[in-house]
Amino acid sequence: AHREFNAHELAKPEQPHRILLFVSTGERYVEIIADHQTHALAPDGAWKKIVDRFLTTVKAGRVADGVLEAIAACGAILKTHHPAASAS
Image (cartoon, rainbow, N blue to C red; front, side, top):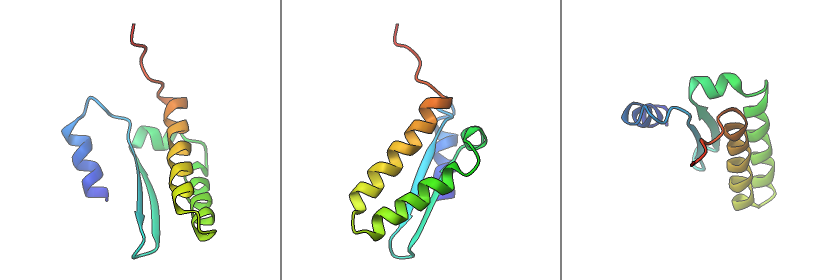
């Protein structure tokens, strides 16, 4: 996941703000990978909170909800720290 994330970062340096939600069901492992700037700007514990909530939702049998909520939470961090440029 880290290698693929870095490859995308190198391929499109004009899009520096990235987050990858990596979920391995076989290994029962979840990780959020963010570019250095976005990772540093997020509040302490933000990534862990998203992963913990994802795991709780998945364990309750609501996998799709867990994925969508995690994506929305990661998107909120991006929007807060890297708002989209206006299309004027």
